[in-house]
Image (cartoon, rainbow, N blue to C red; front, side, top):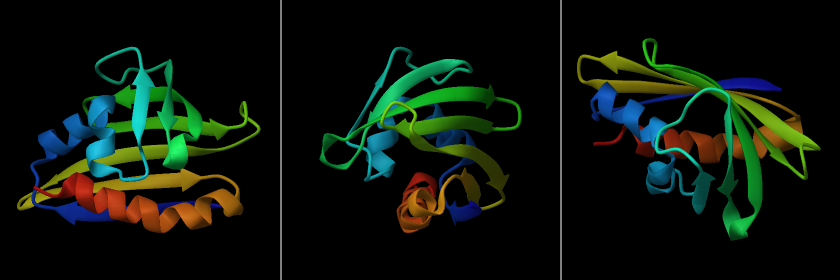
Length: 129
C-alpha cells in the first residue's frame, strides 16, 4: 500500500526542514517516537540508526537520501531484523503563510493503515509554530 499525506502550518519552511534533519528533536513533534539512536547530529544519506517507538520497541532505519536543495529525504524503517517494514519519503514546501509538509508511506497494508492517523497528527505538529 502506498499513501501520501500532507499537512500545513504556520512554522517557516526552513525551521520545519531542520526539525526533520535533527533526529534528537523528532520526539518533540512525533509522539510515537520515544527516542532516537543516531550517530550524527544531522541526517545524512547512507546512514542508519534506531527509533524507539511506543513501549520502547526498537525500529531500525536507514536513510537513503537527503536533498537539502529540494527539502526531501527518504528512508526505510524495519521491525524484526528487516522482516517487515516501510519505505518513507518526506518533503517540505514553503508557502506564503508557512509550510506544507508531506510524507509518502509505502509498505504492507497491516503496517501502513494503522500508521496513517499517527503520521497525519505528527505532520500537523511538525508544521506548527
